[in-house]
Image 1 (spheres, rainbow, N blue to C red):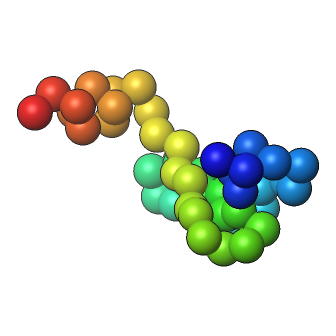
Image 2: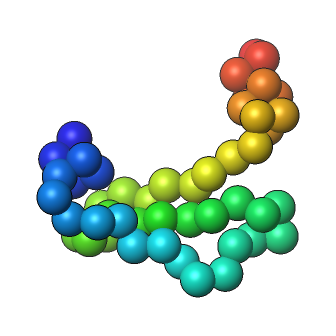
Length: 47
């Protein structure tokens, strides 16, 4: 929790993917975060 929500900023990768998603990485490289569109969330959690 401190790695993501702590005082260090997330690093954003400069070029978004083909889907338009943005990628972020924590300063210690333990976690990677991807933004998703609302339609993608509905598909992911319908199962």
